[in-house]
Length: 166
Image (cartoon, rainbow, N blue to C red; front, side, top):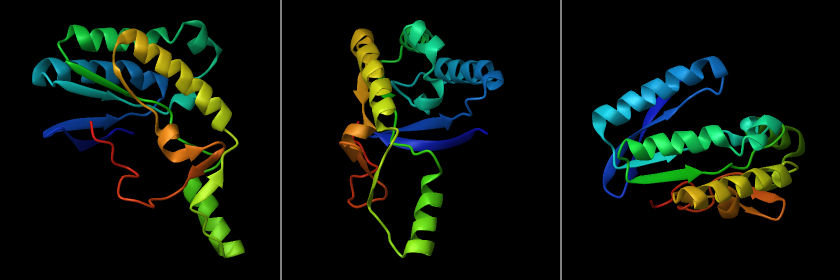
């Protein structure tokens, strides 16, 4: 499934595409993104994905090579600012389902929850941060914003929960 949305960044409006990670769509999404960049010449690109799905032995073994190649190509096309959004908190099951069941059966609504994947997610983000430093691009870590230790926020508790000024 591909959805598009807009994002306000420093007074500019950007088109943002969220693509499925299903591999057969990868080539299409790359071509679509490349054509969009060449046609519209954006100054800023924001890269985000569900990195937990990508994090396997081959990805690490390659040194995150495919992501590095994507960043290199984006820069070659004249994009001035590249932002890499690292892995966000995620749970074993759908968070809305977890919260719904908790409210229905326990009468509770927690604004924070223990996250058993946090160690894996932090490891992924460490590698993404290293790649960002080497590629000289901007890096944003949602886990640093939303988690303390192994506990992460589960819903909006302040105006800046979802907003990060780029």
